[in-house]
Each structure stands twice: as structure tokens, then as C-alpha cells.
Amino acid sequence: MFVEIELVVGMLVAVAALALLAQKTRLPLPILLVAGGLLLGLVPGFPKLRLEPDLIFLFFLPPLLYPAAVQTSWRDFRANLRPILLLAVGLVLFTTCLVGWLAPHFIPGLTVASAFVLGAIISPPDAVAATAITENLPVPRRIITVLDGESLVNDATALVAYRFAVAAVVTGTFSLANAGLQFIIIAAGGIALGLAVGWLASLITKPLDDPATQITVSLLTPFAAYLAAESLHVSGVLAVVTAGLYFGWRAPDIIDSRMRLRAYPFWEMVVFLLNGFIFILIGMELPEVMLGMKGESRSQLIGAAVVLSALVILIRIVWVYAASYLPRYLFKSIRDADPYPGWRNIAIVAWTGIRGVVSLAAALALPATTATGAPFPGRNEILFFTFVIIVTTLVLQSLSLPVIIRWLGVKGDDVAEREEREARLKANEAALSRLKELADLEGVHADVVERLRVEYEDRIRQLEVCDLEMSEGGNGQFPSEYQRLQYEALIVERQTIVRLRNERVINDQVMRRIEHDLDLAEARLKQEG
Image (cartoon, rainbow, N blue to C red; front, side):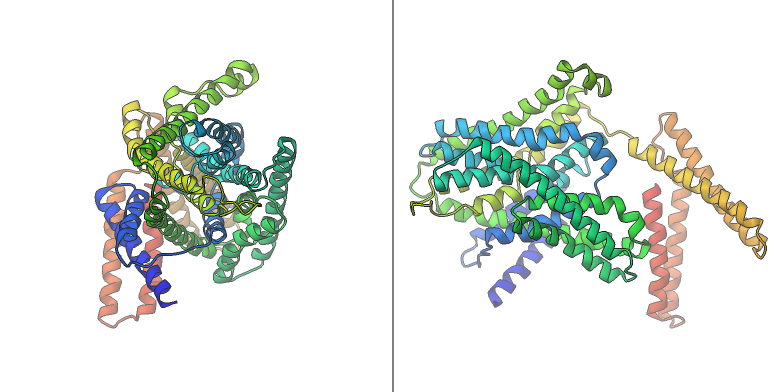
């Protein structure tokens, strides 16, 4: 027990240290985490973390997928449902089948059935890795929406395909018709159950008036959805995603400002730590996987790894371009509703196919034997090539993606910024209109109304200036002088309350309350600027 605690603490220290290094070097954090895990795995005598595959699925997947689903825009998700499904369902199945057909030709000793298992394992790009790599890159919002939507749904497709492929290897039988019907039942059941759990979570959360209890309910929701779905043999991934999408849509009517201010930092920390653990775990497992490949020809392994990595990347590129242009070419209705996208934007989607946690868990979950008691054919090879694909796509694609974006000249759009300015403007205008109504009521002090009126009119003028600047090709930022002066004023306020605390004029509790208000003001200023 002490060794396990010591290992977890050591991994926490590694995550924190590598996060600091990522900030200094500006290298993608997932790459540094995998490298750090690899170094830890090579340290003689360093304890090994043995996690059951089912525990990886349960412990990592639900809390990583749920907040991503909650924060997903349902409007954007629904508007891009066709390209999302083409990637999350079509590409996953296409990759599984093509790898299953081609891999036995260049991986010695791998049967066709085992190759289909390998294809299902390496077919889904990772939600965590994709978000971590693309969140700070200057790309159009629609690309982010499609990539995020794909990563939310594709795990379900891959795990269902994986389940049938493993069953075919273990039992020696497979029925395509039965698999297709089961796929529909599993997917529909997961979605239905997710809606039920999301509705129940909303019902429980709404009357609660304690942020700590509300956050606890939100933490339990993805686990409840996943466990209930798996116990009913439907898709746990789709149940979690659906529950998150439902709750995210209802959230403005369910939770108040106190809950939001505490829940977002909480979930941000949960996702950060889980990301750190899973990528370090990938690195730590690499030496163990290599030990399982003793006796194999290194030159053959390297050659097959290069071919398989290139094949997986090429499959995605071919599919993405075909799925983007072919439906528009064949169907005028699609072409009219959604014109041909630029090939440069398609290239970004085609290149962002980083593998991660789902592939890792699925590979580790492979049974050791078949129904006859014979060793699972090609298990070591599947484990090895899965880890190679994870590391290859993580390193190659994440490091090259910023370079490719600059080379292609792809730039971010200002759609979200324009919508934000317009929404802020309408909200402030509505508030000003309400103030004018309240001014006519008896018992309302005119000076109080005037003070608020001036404040709202000032905000409206700032937003109108930003809208004008954006329409003229500017960046729509608030005037830098105005922003700088606000920051200077906040700094002085902080220094003053700290001085008063140090002089024992106020206590720490009073200081923290005022400091909280100043933090909110600074966060709002950063968001608006």
C-alpha cells in the first residue's frame, strides 16, 4: 500500500514538473508526459503501477469525456453532425477493416482476426490529445468543433468493433449481420440511457443550494452513466457523452453563479491530473511492452511499425478528403447547404489523428487466452504496435501540426468573438432597458439608477467600438490603454488590501473576500480583452 501511495505521489510530482517544463519550452505537454513516463519506467527499482484494464476504462474515460461533452456547443455539434459521424463512425470502421485486411501482409505471425482487433484498437483518435494539441492553435472554429465532436463519439464505435473482433478471435465465430444489429442496439441504448441519466442529474441538481453538493453530483454523473450502461451491455461512452450534452444544454437553468465559479476550476483540475496520469502511464508501460517482444527481429519490428504508422495516417488523409468532397460532388442538396471547404482546412482535420487513452486501455484489456485455452494469437504484437502508433502519432503529428498550420497559412476566424460581442451588447442593452423601467417605480433612488445607467452605457459604447473595429478588419479588442489602466487599478487595490491586512486593520477573511471580487474583475477583463 505504501509503495502504491509513493508511486502516485511521484507521478503527481512528475506531472507538475513536466507541466512547468512545457510552459518553459512550449512543447506539447502530452509528449513531455510520455517521455517522463518512459524515463520513470527505465529507472531500476522504480515501482510499477499495475492498473486493471477495466479500471482504466472506468477511472479515466467517464471523467474525461463528461466535461468535454458538457462544454460542447449542441448547436455547433448538431450543425456539423454529418462530418462528425463520417469521422466517428465511418472512418473508425474503415480503419478497422483496412488494417485488418492489410496488416497480416507485413506483420509476421499476425492472423487476420487478430489484425481486425489491432485495427479496432488503433482506429479512434484521442479526445484528450486532440484537445490538448489544438486548443491554442489558430484554426477556424469549425475545425475544432468537428475534431472535438469526432473524439466524443468515435470511442463508442471503436469499442463496439473491438468487442466483436475480440469475441471472434476468442470463440472463432463471427456474424456480420448480428454484429450490425448489435451495434445499433448498443449505440441506441447508450444514447437513451445517457438522456435518462442527464435528466436525472438535472432533476437532482436544480433544487440543491450548496455548490459542494452540486459538484459532487456532477462528479458522480459520468460514473453513474457509464456503470449503468455497461451493466445493461450498451455503450457506456455514448451514455456519458449524451448525459454531458444534455446537462450542458440545461446547465444555465439549473446551476447558479456560485456553482459555475467553483465547478469549472474543479473539473479543470480533474482533467489536468487525469491527462497527466494517463500519458505518464503510456510512457511507463513502453519498457514492459518491449520486454514482451524479446526474440523478435528488431529490423522486422521497426519496418512493420513504420509501415503501420504510415498506413494509419494515410487512411485518415484519404478518408477525410473523400468524405469532405465526394458527398458534395454527388448530392447537390449537400453542396448547396454546405459548399466545398478549402483544402487547407481539410488538411488540418486529416492530419490531426492522435491516438491515446482508449487505444491504451483496449490493448491492455486483451484476454490472455482464447476459449480453447490457447494463447490469444498475436497479443504481444498487438500491444507493441498499439504503443508504437500512440507514440508515433503523438510525437509526429502534435509537433508538426503548428508548422503545417503556418505553412498552409490557415488562420483562426472571429466567428466566436463576433457572437460574443453581439451577445454582450444585447445583454447590456436589455439590462439598460430594464433599468429605465425600474426608474419609474416608486421607492427607487434616482442616483442609484443613474449610476448603473452610466455603467451600462459605458459598456455598450465599448462593445460598439469593438464591433466597428472588427467590421473594419481590426481584432475587436478593447482599447489597450483602457485595459492597461484597469489592470493598474486592480493592482493598486490588491496592494492596498494586503497592506491593510499586514497592518492588522482587516483580518485574512475580509482580505480574501475582497480579493475574490478583484479576481473576478480581472478574469472578466481578460475574457473581454
